[in-house]
Image (cartoon, rainbow, N blue to C red):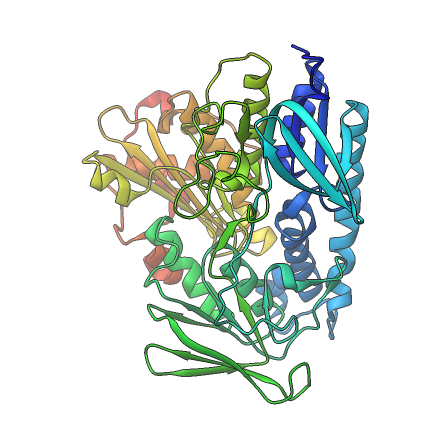
Amino acid sequence: MADHSYQFDLLVIGSGPAGQKAAISAAKRGAQVGLVERDPMAGGVCLNTGTVPSKSLREAVLYLTGYRQRGYYGSGYRLKEKIKSGDLILRTNHVIQLERDVINEDIEANNVARIVGTARITGPHEATVQYGGMESSYTAANLLVCVGTKPRRPADVPFDCFNVIDSDGLYMNGNELVPLPDSMIVLGAGVIGIEYACMFAALDIPVTLIDPRPNPLSFVDEDIARILYDSMETAGVELVFGTSYTKIEVAGETDGPEARVRVATESGRLYEADMLLFALGRVPATDDLGLAEAGVELDKRGYVKVDSHFRSSVPSIYAAGDVIGFPSLASTSAEQGRIAALHVMGDSREWQVELLPYGIYTIPEISMVGKTEEQLKKEGIGYFTGTALWRDTARGKIVGDLSGALKLLFRTDDQKLAGVHIIGEGATELVHIGQAVMAFGGGPDYFIRSVFNYPTLAEAYKKAAQNAMNRMAGRAHHTAPLSQQVLHGDLHENLTRLSGEVRLPADLL
């Protein structure tokens, strides 16, 4: 497809998951590809301040605090008595460097041209790149925008890089973590805010989590969200939902040890802490990219509008990843970049994803795929549920997670699996078992007939399927919501006995 009137067949702007995957996919198919990244270190937000750092930080918190072992050794158990920010960032930096090495090796192995600097689109086939006071121009048959998003920074919030920060501000100078505060307010209980609130609470730092929505995780199954909220409150997080902030100020000497952040809310209450993490949304990082001037249509929030091939209103300019909005996940961004690159290379396939798994790395973690009960009710689809608790598996007892749970939703008309909702250890890994079964239209009989390693948390799928069949037969001991089963042990069903109590077909026993 090479057009020798241009320097590149494809010029990719941004080296996050979408940009990496697109550049390598096109290069593997013979295209001349250039990859622009303003940071000398490839990887974008995902690798440098977002997904990889936050998940690495979470793992360091869980390890150093001994959080996973407290169920056996008591709430005071800690691997290290005094944990400092340097202890936490050590693991994070190590993981980032290893991942960065992999990315650089892939880019180099596929002969993708690295271009360092800040890009600006100057035409349907042109872009300039500035770096170190120098400006260079590049031409390409096609451009692909993968610049992602950045934290929203309202003018009325006094960001100071010390007392009032956003999620990017947690990581100072690229490889240091801000000093750990004695108390913290997290403003915004979306995925980013709630994940960090859980991490700081696990460090025994008092956290106040404020969000204007009554239920910030409204897209999560109600039972699962209730279990999470209860777990967070038990860990010391004060949940303040359904009220907005009216004023934020730093009292005392800024950057000093006596400085305090004060947040006034619509409810009339005033909250104080040593540090405020502002996590109320992200916006596209397209301010200086020149998209509007190039004729690219944006929505009212600044996201690039694209078709099912990820082509913008300008046929030669594509966009993929967080810069186009929902679902804004690293996993989907990579796949979007691949589909866009394939279309550039003449492949007409479209972006079609029916089963999109979500992973939320709270403590405990949450994952889901498919429909929630609320969605099935709204769509008028009959369903029945099956549940299993981690404490009813040997593995759950071994790892010390006695509050994890699995909830399966099956359609009543054909018994096909319609939704998988998990909270607890291993949730983000286990969800893919249910995702695969949903993909081929399986139902409870698949899980009941399957053999799972023992002891594993995956056994919960069999127990949940048996529970579902038991309920269909009208012989369940309790019909309490899953959250009540988890939070009040006396209500939960003894799932270890179900296969002997329910009258299942002989071949399913």
